[in-house]
Image (cartoon, rainbow over the protein chains, first blue to last red):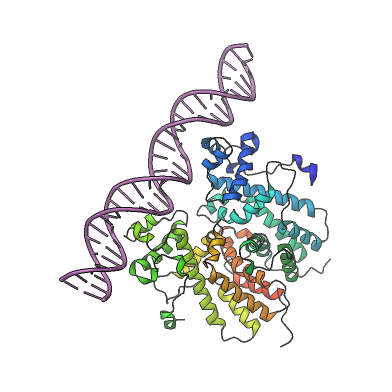
Length: 228
Length: 228
DNA sequence: CAAAAATAACAGTATTACTATCATATAATA
DNA sequence: TATTATATGATAGTAATACTGTTATTTTTG
């Protein structure tokens, strides 16, 4: 990925934030340190007051960037999915063969995250851990329909849709391409969680990866089109 | 199911509660009304104070049954999984053919819940909705390992394991039976959620059910044993 | 009927999730 | 360079939450 991505920015719905955290030093510190703190203490224990102390800024200053910590989580999640989407599109763009293309996409979407030097103030490894542990909480709310309407989940939906399209390209007779796509994305987070906390409920471990499991699952399930 | 189950009790880990809510009228009202309220207002807005008002009892009296609302959620979830487990074992017990048995199990575990007259103070339809919308929050916490050690998730784990065994019985060469089992259970909740809030991300709707999707997925994936 | 147990009523505390006001530092511009 | 926006910091305040504690009253049980 290297230098090429230095100037790439993840485009996030402007309604999620009050002031763009990318637009100032304080904003970047909010993002950087909130990632460290949410990973460390979990989303429920994390507060703007504590974040203020950590970055030696003021609680009320943080509120000028995000209405509340829920919106901050939506921001971090959108950033993460946007970043993954970029990596996936980049990696699969040149592949013509539908099977190879889908295989690569699943690989990118389900593999363990490695640090990406392109975005200095975002720790992608920790962000991936946060998404595994906290993403569900961002949509399992009473406000989900309203927030969905306002476009807070567009990036994630677009990503599922891209996978959906690749599935259809490989097998246009498979009746559940959307469900399979959402299962891979959500299920991947879940398998990582189980590996960490409920190893009896998964076959994923040091030697077997969620990528192997889902690649196998998808390719057992689909029957490639025969009409060239 | 009918009368036979009138006397069946779901055995829940005693550490989850301070005092068994099944042991008194107040306890049963706590369960009954908390299900209605959590469904109605969502888990974050639900408080013991509000529950106290609703059941015309005292906040501090509720604390004599459950340490906090997190424990109450663990209780409700355990009850739900225990109930489902019972239904599944009951329905599959007599089936000898591994394929038929697994098919029936997936059907029970992923189908829409209908009211069960056997447990008068528990509304299973609402409880199912609560599990869809809130169950993840019960384990996506920093305390999950400690609570797992204390056995708060045994029923769920046992259920996944039962499904795992049925998968192995049908295809003992399939390399990911645990992951497939956990994917079916967790994925089913997720597909129901998507159907309700993100219909673009699923193929499940009025005519297509999560049961059809997962039955198809599992049977495309497995290759039945040939050695009788 | 007495004693024990359960429940209710009420008060109190630390923390959370904000909102509001005002002071000060920094940057933009006239 | 002086003026003036704008961003940030410091401080205070509020309603609600998530409890704990004490005492009074009711209910159950032996």
